[in-house]
Image 1 (tube, rainbow, N blue to C red):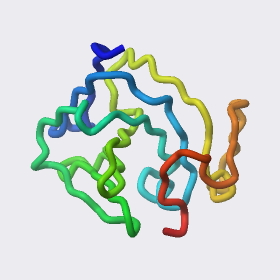
Image 2 (image 1 turned 90 degrees about the horizontal axis):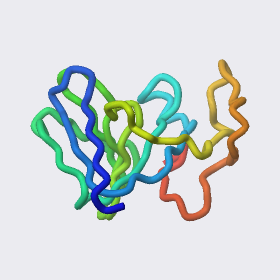
Image 3 (image 1 turned 30 degrees about the vertical axis):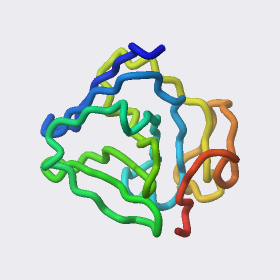
Length: 142
């Protein structure tokens, strides 16, 4: 529904955001880039870039981790925040940033062939060896 709103922030609160509109289901990415950025895996939802309002943008540092996308993090507390492809209409937002209740649901796992060797994926959700068709990702080698 168009009037659905969700808010959230980084750990220190220097970066806050509010989304307006429906969020995509949560996707867990186990590629090496996401693992190295977060320490485990990247669980994120998406929203249209015109449906997010961000406060504290001067506290976001963008890091180009692939040839066509960048990752945003808080330059005060280090919280991983966003992933966005160049020229994209949507922005990925780390699911853990949302205030609760978020009503978000984890839907599936991608890049499972690249997951860390110290954990198992045992929640019964679909697992994709690489990316999922129709889902824009950078992948572990880009």
